[in-house]
Amino acid sequence: MNPNGALYHKITEFAQNADLYGFMQWLPSSTPALLKQTLHNMGGHEGSIWVVDKPGQQLVTCYNTLELQRHVCQDLSSGLVSKAFNEERAVHHKGLHRFQDSSGQVDETLEQKTQHQISVPFYICGQLCGALSAVQLSSDFHSAPREDVPWGFKDDAIPLLAAAAAVIAEGIEAKWQSGSDK
Image 1: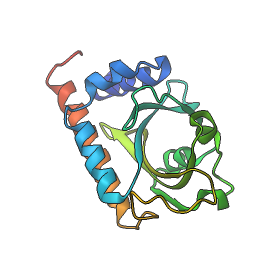
Image 2 (image 1 turned 90 degrees about the vertical axis):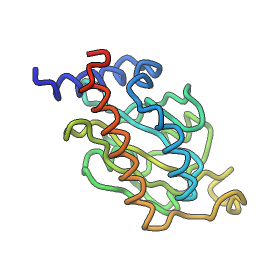
Image 3 (image 1 turned 180 degrees about the horizontal axis):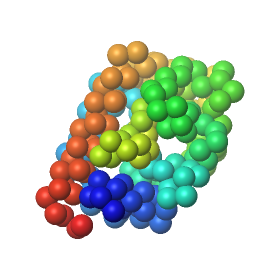
Image 4 (image 1 turned 90 degrees about the horizontal axis):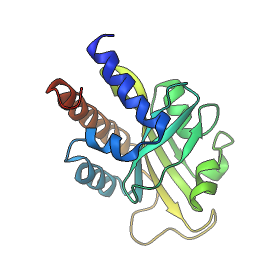
């Protein structure tokens, strides 16, 4: 197996085994601050790194900005994060309740309501490995906007989230190349 393939295998293994702490070892130490600052600049409430499991059937949250234990899975056949992964492109939805391709599975599991979401593909060593998502939450689909952020993501938030995904991936690759835990 080539070195890049070995890293991809290792990262997707964390999703298969739901080893959140193992995955966090590979994140650059700047990841929490980078994601929180990115979310702040975008006007987001929460962000997650999703990794595809080894059988390629679902995406698994391996990191979340609010709670490490926010471990949820999204089947690859439904949902907006899966759409970003499957189509290998950014997905930006405003007012998710209006879109039929929004599954609601993650919101049900976490007992929350997502109003707006941006998801971008996440690559490790040039291989599609998962997605990075940012969301704005409300108490229900018809509630007033939360006061703590401007409501709705602007289109210029997409390249900001994509840049954060690239920086995180580069940090993971650098750890691998330095020989850490091969």
